[in-house]
Image 1: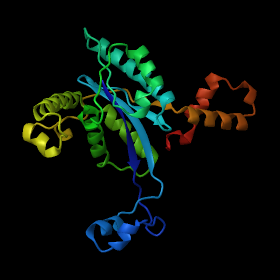
Image 2: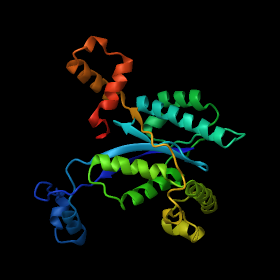
Image 3: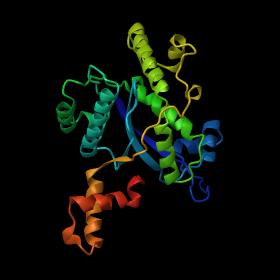
Length: 275
């Protein structure tokens, strides 16, 4: 199970009079060059609106999609690990696998912290693999993120709710056959690395070896995989504390707030996904 997080940014139409392009001192000296003119015409909002999502890919399909509320840290990553373990166990049961699936992650700081590594040891035991540093693009999940963003670009995403619904819809319809193709492509990339002595893999080098065999989303039926559209959310501890404080301030029955009704309050919180 190759896992990772990905931030998907919503780019709404912006008013160029309000969202002024801020150029560096070096850019100001080269105002008439093509590169600087390109920056001046591509307006972006001052503060990005985005969603952080996470998940995994196996030869048997994707995990359930997970939305991350707040920056991923040790606290929220432990919740993510439990969700992934649940999906791995289900895949093993559904496909009657004799061997356990292996868990993979990259070397992000919250992944490799002492707390996270202790949790991984407890949850996955020996069913995990070592991953080399500075090798994120080898992971098949990166291809999934690229395809997801490509499919998103074909849809209307005018607000955060539409973006969230479209992400979930694409994820739940992601073809299992495409997952198998992406995993097979990973095997080819490993062979290239071995043959070339571990050098950086660029597009031209990959194309040299994998001719007309690259995973393409357009070749597959996007109705072939019917996954349950259930929203999973992992919460940053700071987000939970913030919600709890607000709930205690506003609730008339603040003394009776326990874990059960706190969860209800969290799920009703409208701005949780607006990260």
